Length: 455
Image 1 (cartoon, rainbow, N blue to C red):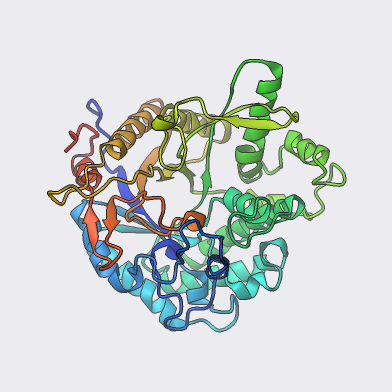
Image 2 (image 1 turned 30 degrees about the vertical axis):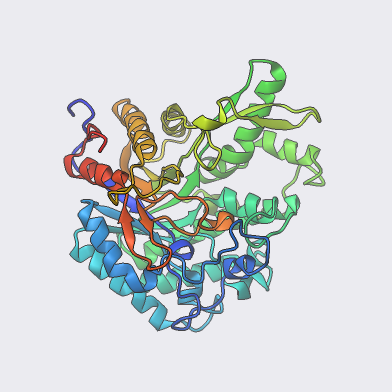
């Protein structure tokens, strides 16, 4: 490889998710999701928006594939809406819902873009939530049933499959902190949810391989390096706690077949477990969770700096001025992507790694000449790609990079207030407006190098 050049065959992609871009939440037999329910409750979404229309991708998907082609992308990571395929979460398959993804896959392949579908990106059918959702062990069989319905329809053309996106967010934000659907605040429940997500992942990996010979199957975890504010024992322990809670609780079971003992003790000490035992773990569960993966997807946005708080609990610290943060309030720390890749490679040794999400939220206005000059986003991408390349050159089996996100979209509890897209969206017409970062990233994909100048 030349300077700043990526290896031949490196995949450049864009990423989205169904709930965030599709809209059409009441069309063609789609059932209600937990995010449809959550967003309809006043006060749950920062700007009061809902995903009912979102980016209208359900009707404009051909146009969006043309955008990807224009960026020279070789891969597209999207997610499939469970309630569009199985409106009640189980039972009768909605063939019209699958028709949408069938046509999407065909068009992607026609354009030379590899489809990377994610089976679950947070839009659980509300009917299954009414039966206990991810807190119930019964959800595992329902997830396998759903994965079979999808892979039987698309598996003749799709080889790369992701089971879950960011189990940490589902368990913690949705069931412990309550800021994501379904809005629960129950730390003990969140532990069971995390386990059922991982167990359903393991079962689905086995099911997908039966349905799709030669399939490449993985899971996507968000990774956040934990740094202590100082080298004091208290701050070092706070960083250990965060790393265990955020990173190791999800990676250790998948690659080592066990939960980290120190995190079990942390949870017991906090009163989230009545003993050192995990009551939701049954015989044989860990062997299923640790079913061999073909790849691991990593999402990276920033690091976490931890210190001991006044109450003795870990407390996050933002080490930079506010004007150096993204609009999410996150520090721009590209070195953390290098740290994450090296750490995961060293500790877990997955056969392949993809960066499945990386990007920054900035709200840059349309200039009088009609362009969107988002230099901060370009700088963010460029610095993180150089960090990723450094890890690759040091032996990390990094195979591809997916920018988050293709479009400004429904950003969960924040609605449309935070903008990650390479393309903006006109709120009135729905038209897509390329930002300068789109042109820059398209040149990266075309040249396989990050040397593209700012526009």
